[in-house]
Length: 285
Image (tube, rainbow, N blue to C red):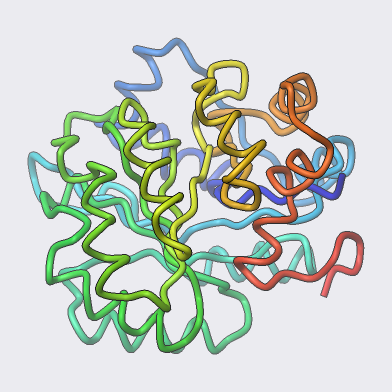
């Protein structure tokens, strides 16, 4: 299938420690859900991608703030993503992590990293900043992404961590899509539990899409499958939030869902290739 994973977290042993083991807010959730993650070398990870028929993964230089302390608990450096991408040419691309507290300095950094060729979009985790996704402090970043012609991936729906879920209410995307009709917006994690809200916005706005990361396909809302199969063709993107899900198992579950062939191909990779302007399967450019 040449799948594209639009949201795959940094997977090296150092990256897993940095993002899922050391931050207490995250490690508490990992323990609560009974999960266990093991890091992989770049070579091991690319081999697992090949085994699952995954062509490209997008890794965010994720910035997540603690709601309790306001300090960054995820601060993946852009250089970390670039190092992995350079070790796996064409197989890894980056998403620039938005920290609204950086202001215009952050906007300039976004432009520089997009210009480097390693990053194909931006990424936002709004909850710990205690700012709704339609807050004015995010707008300079949205404006720059619209100017550069790159998408923004934003987590919407509930927050698994001890953070206010209302910051990611999918309906808030309505304002952003109206103000930035040129900006492609990917609402991540299916918008659950407000899946219908996100579906409605993806149907209403040409520039709004639905990402399925962190939610295993066997648990996808039937309305999401119907949407991707019909009037939402090309609007739904496969993602894992790796290591939350493994690629091989998740893609097997996608194959087992009642998708039409064209719709399945768009979900698995076609839609992401179009939105993020990625090369065709196997070309690795």
